[in-house]
Image (cartoon, rainbow, N blue to C red; front, side, top):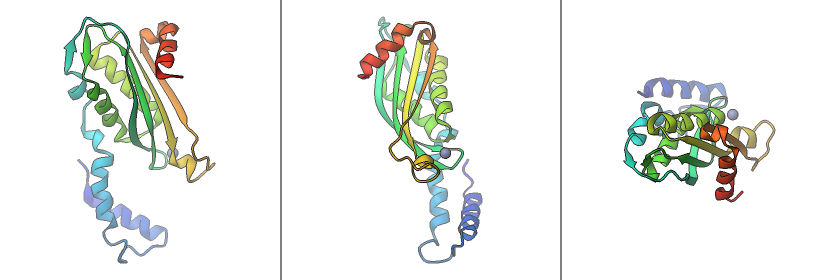
Length: 185
Ligand code: ZN
């Protein structure tokens, strides 16, 4: 899936482009190192959230389930710089629940790609709806973007917050209010 040779060529060219010597001691192995790192950072592209979310259990419970403070790391597709923070996921089961670790795995599947935070938020919510068929799903991401902290407007610590609502969360505002209360906001 990941073409190491292409990545190595590109990194060597980039190093030359910024005036570096790709052959010097400290940089000699950097192209190969970055190619290996890409396997991990973009490994989500080869994965399908369905493999995690289709392992459901039957449950009578139709009370809101919340998994909060799921740490994630992703990469912004505009700058190829990290953005990272916390994901909070809620869903209202319709006879089916998943193991809580599966929600964190779903976040990983979509975070380990080049992303936009808004798109990442929506993809997690859509995957829940598609593979678990709950009555509704809500995903909230809070993240710091290195492209805003170490370059551009340089505002370290500022958090970008995105929200995606699906199903019953779109029509019943009281559920969203409950989510925020349970989150402690
Ligand atoms: Zn960016």
